[in-house]
Amino acid sequence: MKPGIHPEYKPAVITCACGNVVITRSTRGSFNVEICAKCHPFYTGKQKYVDTAGRVEKFKKKYKEFYKEEEKEEK
Image (cartoon, rainbow, N blue to C red; front, side):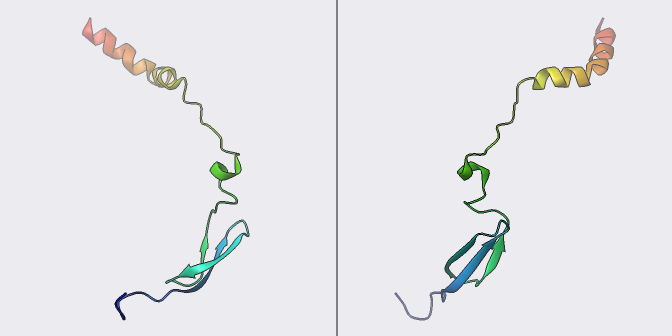
């Protein structure tokens, strides 16, 4: 390693909003994060899958009046 070109790594404390504290090394020092591996839904197994079925029907229901007018103009 060339001397003088590498950043200095200092001990850092990363604090999550859930209260989890991780001690590591960083060039930035200590900082806070909103979500970590202890509280992230993907890692905890509490992930919710969004039901995407019915999107087309919902769209058609929402804009059915617009499409009725368009069909009348074509005839």
